[in-house]
Length: 220
Figure (cartoon, rainbow, N blue to C red):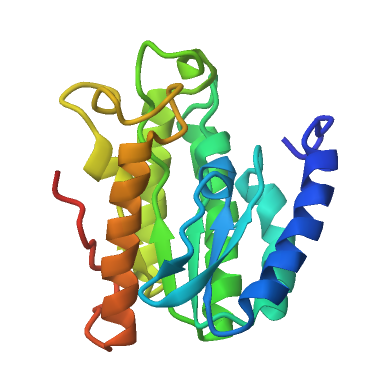
């Protein structure tokens, strides 16, 4: 994807400005949430008592997020980092070989975050909900495959995994009905559930009781 024209570049420039302002307002020692449009559309004021800095970039993929991570963490000076990226790496036409390549970029992001020594919450990409406006832009099997890679790599890196892919998965190939508004972006009810899962994970980290690799709140 790096060789293709990037239609999101102007938006990302604006987001850099907005995120910088948000960091100043929130101050240090908060929860920095890195990721794509699913993160950008999520605005809780606080999680586990920590102010949340929303560092979501609509349209971003793993390879494009990687060079931003170190700067964002350094500027935010958070107490906890959360990560949700990979959704845009599972577009239509992506197969197992492409997913393995993406997993390599995801692992590099994890390595950057692990080097900071900060607690990390890794949120898996959600499943695709079938029969909605954006469904055909994504590959449900690739999304599931990538989510499994992300969870495995995050656990290996010592992160806490919040597996929303498993939590929102239906009986068939896609997400349960009502999980999203358009096939991929979360509904209000799903955002409330994500908030609860992050609240549980961050609270456990702050209390020192969260073992690496645990998956709080993943059971439907």
